[in-house]
Length: 65
Image (tube, rainbow, N blue to C red):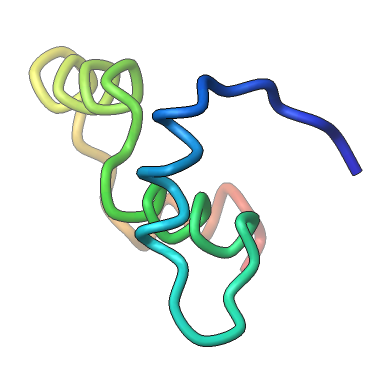
């Protein structure tokens, strides 16, 4: 387990997302699942623009699936 320091106002807001018996860990993971990090999105868009499209059969062959 890790302690994450947050401001009192942030903790108040975070508590507003808890429902039922959800833990703060579950709340934070649900929020992160909804909004991927900006770096992830930027890298995904770069790959779509710049990298070659690979056929699924080629991927399976490379991975020996």
